Length: 348
Image 1 (tube, rainbow, N blue to C red):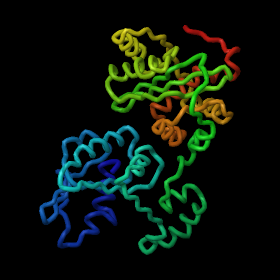
Image 2: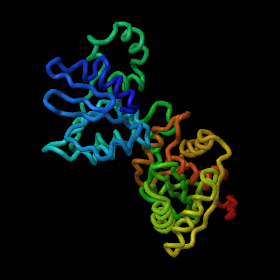
Image 3: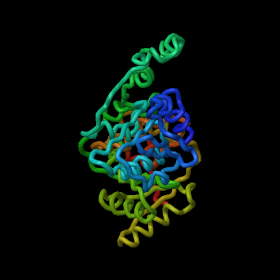
Image 4: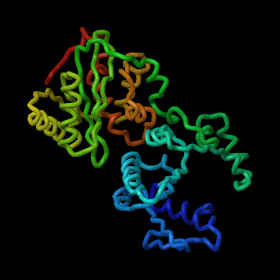
């Protein structure tokens, strides 16, 4: 569950929770202080949540029930899932049952695409006998025929989140297999404040004024690890001209990390600080406008980056890959919006 309270109120003590659906002769003993459920046959279930991924470490088992995976926070949710998978190592056939609204987050898309995943869809109408009549008259009728209805009522996985700034069709429409010669290439870096990935996205500006996204080498690890990824996997491998990183976060931490990695690798890196003087939604809107004008092209596919782009909505914390993309495109083209021969390049 997303939080310990969700696990208790929904999965254990809820109307359709384990204590309610298990028959008296096979009802587990719930021990809140130990975070366990113990069945008469000796089977023990440990209760954990995405609120604290570290608590999932070390547990081993052969079956897990995961509820509302789509509601798990992006960074902690991924770490919780990864830790859970490490513990599914006992018995002859370890299995995980995921019950969730099918929001198109990257993790759910990955699970659906795995060859051993079995997907079962169900609509609210199949559960009609257990729901209040007014729920159908007032609530479901309101959302019939909408994208939200397809997701929430019929359990359909949509291509993008309702209200997201980017759509998959917008990205796909201008996707290319190869970029033309680039006259200026930049790596955008957005560091993490914890265990999440550091966003590292590279692209370049061509003579026609169009931007081409060429790499996403976002890295989950220590500053030394992601600094090396910036220099070796992006800057050097794709022959970039500059690295841009947000100074607001950690002062000069990004520049310091990148330059240390460059020194250790024997490389010279041009670096520029950028400053977040506007909110993230305001910074992203000009970039979205470039996509809508057909001036941004993804060279190949970037599943995790594109998943973040089509999932992020105003008011939510923007993920790191997306922020790195916005910094990169802003540096290359947002202030120009004209052919490159008229762009004034300042190396600072």
